[in-house]
Image (cartoon, rainbow, N blue to C red; front, side):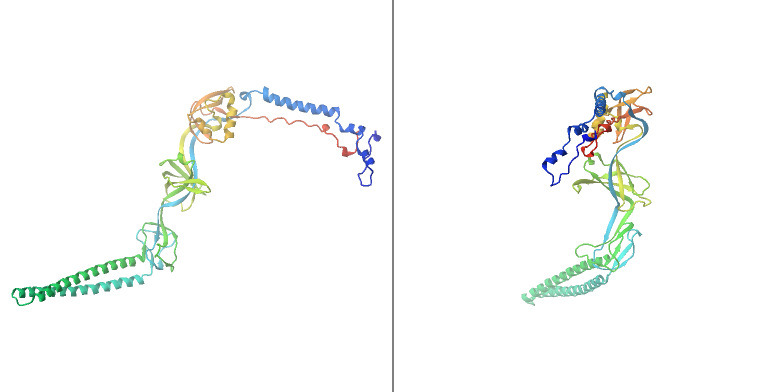
Length: 448
């Protein structure tokens, strides 16, 4: 048999085309390239086995009630349906303390973290310029008051002169011109007196303003609280001509406000007065409780995502909570205490048929929609495993639900097993026989 194999010739440029035809396999060589009877038989058996298993799974497999199922036990517990959000903490009552006058910040009497009371002295601004203005106003006011005394004396003299001229006119001892001059002098004296009075009022008003500015050089605490930030340093020059510069912030930390940002899709689930709680990073899972106080109507748009602020207050008597802390917020939409609970995957719509239970669960997961919408009427179906191991369909009344668990109001008792899915059997992989492989021609050897 060794002579049945025809040797191949290298395809070099020196070879003649006639010699290249010798490289083609001969009928005797091609016989070994075809699979033998044993290989064909094994391949046919593997294909038939796989096809038979597929046909059995498709047309002859038992229904879901006879297949192995996954179960869960109904238990009692507490359940909450919540809307989650992330927020930050801010003091509910705080004041940015600024200055109404310009000048050098001469003295700071407090530091960050200092606890102050209302009307405590916080800082002082150089008051030399403002004190000088007040002193000048006082001097000008004294001068004008002296002028008023002079004008009043001149007015009294003008009145006497007019009276004398009138008496002499009755005796025809004076002229009409002298009487008219006396009347004019009286009116002029009255006008000069009134002018000085007006100047005195203006100077007094300027004095009050300058005294107020002098008082503003001392900055007092408007509220009781804690100094949480300092925006100016001692010795810094403050310019209050355009806007009041901020010196520090005082906050009352006994009550904190949580500002949570809620997605526009979840805002309709919120309402004023609903219960809400939150936890903080590193807070040892401690919960802080409050009630929703306000939802401002103006949203914040972040990367084309519309978010609404939801505000609520929480007591902070021990000042554990601090400014700008991050809060994981939970708005309690509904809750149930000591309720019978089952996994949400165990429920099916009351209109669904038992044979379609697996399909209903699969379609619900595939769609990605909120499965709770199917039970808005409060009715659902459960597959319950009885004491004999049989699966019984039962209609129940559903209460509070979240995305994982549902409350059963009636129709199920704690300890009963419910079906939550069907175990799948992996399909057998087709057997591939090594004898079905055809030897390559490049191996260059035949079967003995």
